[in-house]
Length: 338
Image 1 (cartoon, rainbow, N blue to C red):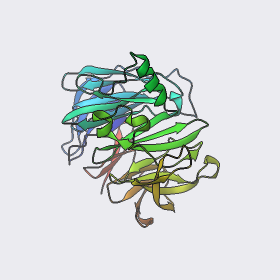
Image 2 (image 1 turned 90 degrees about the vertical axis):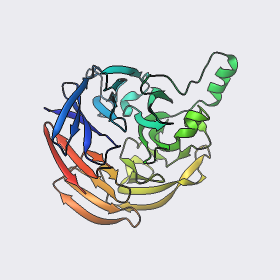
Image 3 (image 1 turned 60 degrees about the vertical axis):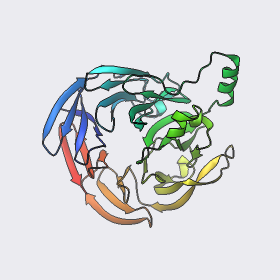
Image 4 (image 1 turned 135 degrees about the horizontal axis):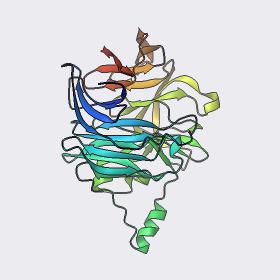
């Protein structure tokens, strides 16, 4: 396969099937169990390598895969541009531009999901706006028309002072987790209902009734977080300010809320906080995996106890349905199966 820039799991498979993005832009399907790699397409997204880094982060190519592996998205984290590709035809179905606006502070907001049997892609179209499009046709599904004064009034009413960040769809595919921030700045991960957003209210991601803030942390966002199941979220870092943050994990129930301090919006109930987890977070629905640069640690997210350690292994990617963790460096992959 050559040097690999990124991997993305094909989630509908209970065997380790991945999409792989080569350093040369080639996108292929890698069946790890069979030992087969098949090239399927190529991306032409500019690497934006001439951009000034923000917070020490330079633009980097990121690969996303649809659940069945038919569609791939290649975007520039901490940059502006990307595209969605139909790997059956090799054609670009959607050209992506997040329009800038402190884009250097966050990964490119994008996730694949499913709605009424079709593949959709959630993507940032402005610093404070997300949209949903049909992955096959590129058709916009969350049109917020501004063709009349009443529409402009609605846009002002729903205006969101929020810089969208990395997105994660819940394991049941029903909710979206957004690792964004608000000015001055404060990191505010939030959750809302995907089905309601597409089918009922195009403003759901701004201020709909299903929207819940997870927590607020001054000068602290773009750190690890993961869905444990479709209710609980694990967030890295214990504390409310970057200057006083301690290594550890906080576990939140996003279906139970109280009235928060900022804007008095619904805020998720914290179930547990425990020291120890650091680095990247993953979960298989039962355990919380954390990995720094030296080892993988396995935690009980109910009691906060360390269950085990895999020394010398720091995975970069997780295939939840195949129960596989992978670290890729150049043209070498190291694999651990739980």
